[in-house]
Length: 118
Image 1 (tube, rainbow, N blue to C red):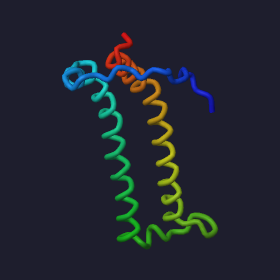
Image 2 (cartoon, one colour):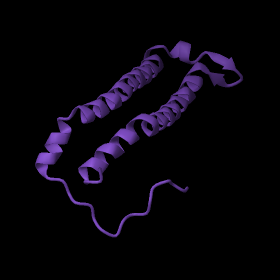
Image 3 (tube, rainbow, N blue to C red):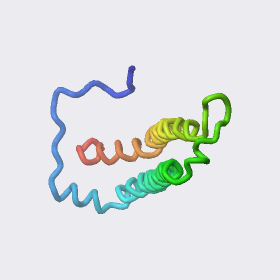
């Protein structure tokens, strides 16, 4: 898989000082990056955990419902179980697209500035 990143340079970038790290961490730019990440990741995490717990609770306490045959040997529990896998992959794909479009450019700009490449 090819990437658009340039090859690594032969010289190591200058490492920023502790003060520079603290200054960047307190900057509005870093705060916006953190807000962008959290506004995406936290709601999805909470939603997925709730969805997973619903599946576990239904499996534990609603056996008759989960055992309802939909067609052939396929029942509600199997469909919801496969939906768990599908949801996991969809969230990973969605996060990858979101990070590429919204988080990576901001992170690269901060990294570049921290390494003195303004």
